[in-house]
Length: 224
Image 1 (spheres, rainbow, N blue to C red):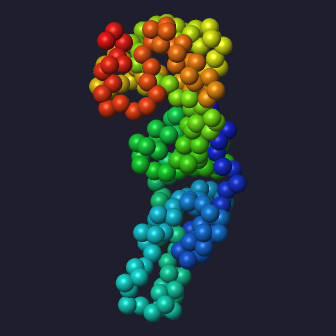
Image 2 (cartoon, rainbow, N blue to C red):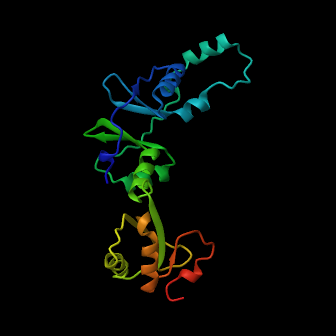
Image 3 (tube, rainbow, N blue to C red):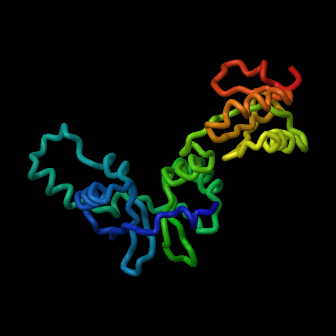
């Protein structure tokens, strides 16, 4: 999946001269976490988050009166606090790459640019939504884990067992087990009504299956 298929295109933009008070009101009203800052030519020049606003908001411990405080905040503008070094992606960027970029740079959003034009924004919430949908957690299902050696054909053997018993695989993903080099964890989701049948079929074919957390996974290693 690509960023272009997930990004938000109903963008909320502000000018660099917008006050912090007004920016905070917009974020609250629109129920968003980021504001894109553009100049008069609609060119992206900055980004500000609700976190940035909170960090630059005056403390309640101030000795200023409410009137004085509001006056001061009205004088503070977005250009004083916005992030000017912006990391962007294109609509053709994969979701995985976008997620990696956000994690690497410890940011929660990425403006999307195409032909030097701002066309969207993608956030960590968008990426999380795609992940949850991809692993099938949004539907009633049974989660089955199997530890496997890193070798050609292992996934085909597992898939054959499901096919043999007419069990539909809703999702599957794998990740390496850091504590055991050469071992991968396969996680399948099958329809909840077929969960028990799938577990029995896999065990019958010699696979070690577990469906809940185990602090010690050694008993489930292949060949043990």
